[in-house]
Length: 551
Image (cartoon, rainbow, N blue to C red; front, side):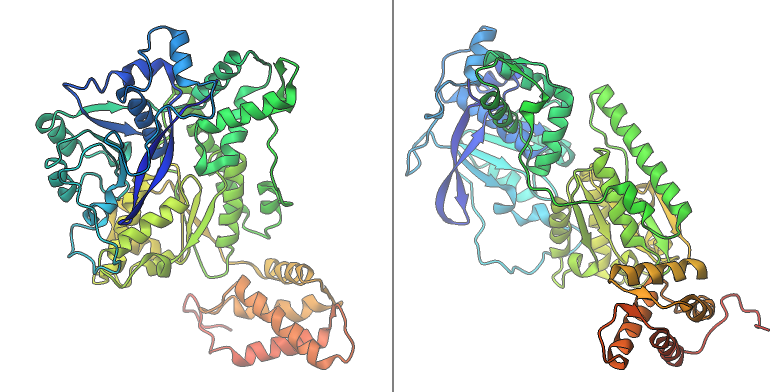
């Protein structure tokens, strides 16, 4: 019994075609319906609306296997199971011979046909940097087109689709479905539109049990834990074919026994020593209010996830948040801790991507949107941390065209990737400025968490913790030297909190290295004093925050 696959060809940037394998859908209750989508007469063109491209391609493979006459008609449940799973691993159900036979289907991405699918329509087309030509599909037949751009069904693609004469399968992620243009294709080109139901964890559990039952094995394992562990391990690469792979491994471990337990489903993996999210939070000095707000956000997101699973729907609630506060208040550290906590709770997949303006904004008009899309694809299902978010757009009057395009693209992709948690980190007033530039941003952020400046006591602890992290202990009396310094510095406008504490420590280490003739792991009091004196000397004139004269 085997998850079957169908072979197709993908065009390779104008060069020779490459053969690819598409896993066939194993969702056997819907196989009959998919089999009848191509009847060879009335509906030769299919639109597959799917949660993600992998599921759409799996369904496309199921249809190809049906329409190309490589199997018998499916009637009984036993026949259905036999059509989905094949005993023979050597031969795929449908093979395209080299040279592209008349039955060969070719896969294109929409971005290989039209660059309009990635352009912001408000501005002129971006300058072309690539010398790879676009494909013209006019007059071609037997096509699978994956709508992979920011926008699906661009005007150019629509024109070329209407000039084709053969069979076409369009794979469109649900969040990119253009209702008006889909209806146009249904009416003018007689497309059949089929929306694949959202596949829940319960669906994958049932699939595992069905496969094991067909192989003659009983499953006594916690299937929910098995599937959850598999999805967490595979992350964005997860596909239902992975279930078959893991099941086969479990069967090999259990044979000749016909009963499978939890121990048979373990996954071999490399895993470095990692600190838990709770341990990360405990290791962060101060920020008690922020930590409580982080825990509340996690509890809320987890409740929404469980409710969505209970109802059998996708969790599309906004989970993105904003951190605002002065420089060096631990926003990046908290973001990494939050990512770990969310991953442990199963809210995200553990991916953490950090980006800033230089990663998003391009000097080429229109290319910024493509950069935004690529970064969201990298962070899909995980956490995207946007550091110094206030610099995304320079000024408040919208004159920064690249920054405005970037912010608009980010807001659109927050809708397209609801499973991705976006964390904006900015200084105190900068988030409000971004909300003014793009009014849609604020409604997509679930919470704005303020970070307060560290107190003198907390800064002393941070200094000690940083020294310990570098392998140093501190000479007795260090607190009496650095505490007065911190008292003065926290009243200035340009105080950098944790960043300036690190600078002070590095300066003290450097001074001791020059002063001491012998190697030592104890940071001397004289080195700390000199580092403080030099920092005060280099400090710009102090300003009162509130405006009252100091006594």
